[in-house]
Image (cartoon, rainbow, N blue to C red; front, side):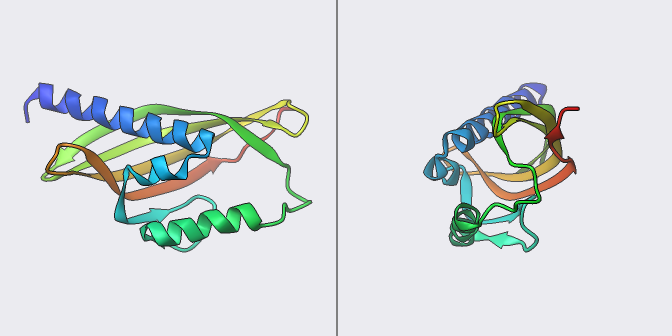
Length: 149
């Protein structure tokens, strides 16, 4: 593969992922869904079963909103999502991206928490119009957020 094509794929993937995380922080599910394939599969870090398709993702989102907060867990809110160590490679007609996601946040008093770190993998498909769609996303939290001591 020519190095220019590789760098374009990297830039495209970085832009797509950064935009998706910005949309997440804004609570814009429709914008997120626009970068997902309709039959996307997701291993979500906060849910055990494999999510298949946008309808199951919508159900998971509704459960998160309606679930009562667990009094024994510390409550915090995401304030920034940062992609680190992004690696992008093309394998045939798909693009595979791996990265670390740093999730910064604050507790209910506005005090910063130690960041959550997760490793992520996405399999993306390039559509005929050249746009990318995420066909599979796997999130694996390796360090939970917790109050700074």
